[in-house]
Structure formats: structure tokens, C-alpha cells
Image (cartoon, rainbow, N blue to C red; front, side, top):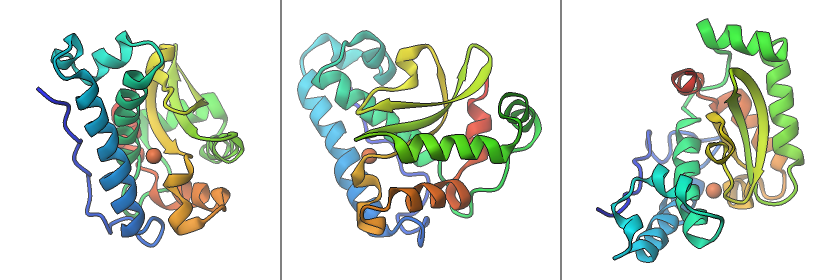
Length: 193
Ligand code: FE
């Protein structure tokens, strides 16, 4: 069974004005779709064709198959990491974990923003659970927490295609909008195991 493009969890204009429908049209409709199309072409008729996306990611060394499979997973995580009228703060167990491991929600956001703004080149900023502790990490290109024994709670795409239509070169403004207006803490909480 071919790998399917995961459904966008909201309408294409739902994140405006922070991310425009045009950005989503390109980022989801073109980039994310292209990773799916490319992966399915590469694995057609091969043993990977009967595996799940996570199995392909875990079982493949860096290269075109890994890059496309990981980018499908990363983007699904990214779309779910945002929600219209997001931002704010977590509650319950996740709030306790954030306070325990960062000191406060504000300090966690500061670390996340710093990682996302200063990452050199294409990649991702993450809130992960690593051996029972929350941490901010970043990865280059298609690399992802799954490959490092970590569980992703939140993903922020810092490839230029994520923000160039709306923010041009101003990645810091995009990261601020992501953290203050779009962050989906409910999704993050659902990933806390
Ligand atoms: Fe992207």
C-alpha cells in the first residue's frame, strides 16, 4: 500500500495571518506532497513498500529513501504542532514537566526560539522527551528525534520554504508567530508518554 499524504488538520487558510493559505498551498500541497510522491516511486516493488513510514525511517540509513520518508513524518508532526488560535501555555502533566525541566514556560519558549532562529541552514527545531526529560533539540535537513531515541512533542520547520512567502528572510518573526500564536500544546501533551 503506498504511503499517503497525511491530512492537514485544519483548513488551508486557518493559520492566517501568521501563515497564509499560499504558504500552506506550497508547503503542504507541493513540498509535503512531493516527498510522498518521491518516496512511493522509490520504494515501488521493493521490500519497503510493505512497511509503515516509521519502519522505513528506523530501518533506512541516510539517503534519498530516508530523506523523503523522514520529511513526510516531520511535516505531519509540524502541521499537528500548530493550531488556529494556538500559543499560550500547557496545562496538567505537561506544564509540570516544562516547569521541572526548563524552569518556566517562558524559558522553554526562549530556548526553543533560540534553537529555531540560530539553526544554520535547513532543518528543524524540536521539543522532545529524552530519557524522561524534556529537551529542546534541533536537527539538520530531514534528521529527526526518532533516529536519536527521542520522542518528538513539537516540531518547527526552519527550512526557508516554511516562511519565505510570508516572512521573506525574517526567520525570527516566523518563529515568534509559531510560538506565540500557533503552538498546539494539546498535541504536545498527547505525545508525552
Ligand atoms: Fe518543510
